[in-house]
Length: 238
Image (cartoon, rainbow, N blue to C red):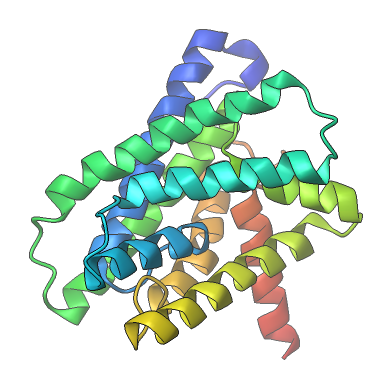
């Protein structure tokens, strides 16, 4: 792969779309395994379960993901005290592509026979690969990012805290809130389980692998890489 500066804007846009399709596939497949989704998808996943349990209007995982990320976009504007360029709303473009792809991928993935725990774990690992490839392509395209990623960057900028610390804290908060919501309203863990932790740790590691494979190891770390490194460092310190 050539550097971003050597690729046309159209090529990079296409690469971003392909990356978003892979991310959507990773999220949809992880949800179908029932072992837990990625941290950023925990709240939308739990909300879909709550709607199903209490016979509320059925809102898809993709739509809940769009609404949640739109809320994070509003959070960015609030953190920046309204001093933003209209370009900030362009984040809705990749968000729309990603969330639509989640619902599209959910159809074929929902037909997979994932009844056994072992086969679910295998599917979870496949979803991690999908997610890591998608994030790598999206970030490497260097066009636009979804609000879920940009919110953490803005929060780190406003607070002055290291990005890796903010990212890890943010994702842990999402997991804790989702788990609490699930335990209170669903009487069990749905949408956030062991697969969520696996996703949080392994996606960053796989992204690092793709970056080394394609000669991108000298660039800035992605949010998932920073989080994975932070979690691994904490584990070794303990």
